[in-house]
Length: 102
Image 1 (tube, helix red, strand yellow):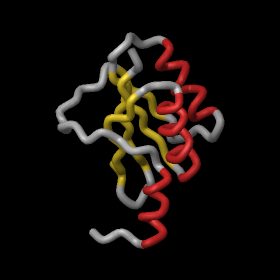
Image 2: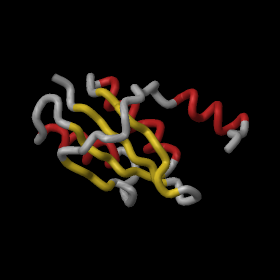
Image 3: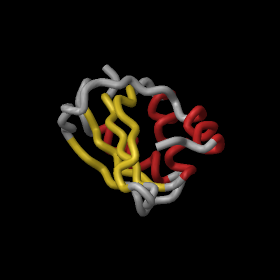
């Protein structure tokens, strides 16, 4: 599937992610698809604070603003975004896998 120039430009603003294999099993999951910023990051941060170093959190999110802000904010806090992928094509739902810093 070819990406439009606008889509490619949008993707360029998303923090780079490592591309490990797809066999990572998350330790916990949070669905913030119904949240709006800034609560998307607040809820994600609160979940991460209850996790251990090196654990992996799966974050399901939706919308342009959360897709830009949540991965960037997690990276700024020292966490590692392992995977950032669209999971519900046409619905705009994305899945992040985030390794808790440590």
